[in-house]
Length: 266
Image 1: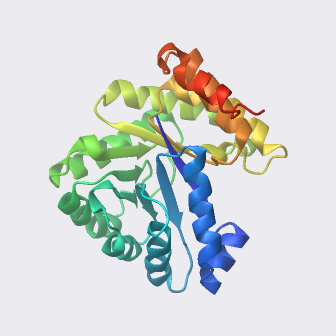
Image 2 (image 1 turned 120 degrees about the vertical axis):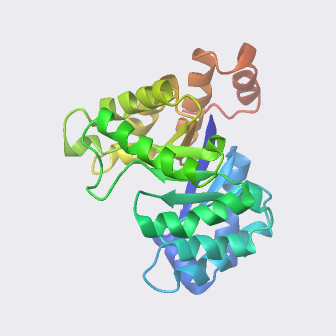
């Protein structure tokens, strides 16, 4: 399972300010710290109503100066995703995040993904919003898969975002996500799944506790990639322990190594 570092995101005030002020040191420090913590991919989200494409090009350039790791270009705007790809050094390892069934987003991003044969994240939602059940999400995924496949893109590159909703907004939200992941894996074995862990705790106090408690359940359900905060030492410790318990860490070698290095802090 892949860890996607989520901290370079302008929803965070310090990142928004760093992008606005062209504060290279802050952005590079965030990138370096996440890589040291063990992420597999770095998400880059510079969402802004103004100059988003320009901001994305700048952020990608300064991040690549200090780390060599796949980047995930995160935007609802195809123009911004294209701008990010323009300056990425290794386009085949770069993730396009994301598309929906919206025609404009499909047409803007799919040619890019086909050209570079790179990973693609598709949000499991249509023009009606987030489907209300696991079964309906799987049906949306079926439509997404058909469009992507018909475009000539390898399905091995496709990640379906099963969409975690906050448990604070209604009953059964966490169970719905777990059911969606399991159903998705059973229905489309070739397709990978991805979720954003922090979404589950939105609006609640003690969010870290909720997040790290939900993490092993997601791993057991079979999720393939998770956006999370790799600098949360308790979450990373839980991640390693869960993999050991769920037979995803051969002979518990990664868990033992992390313990020896003093990384299992809770």
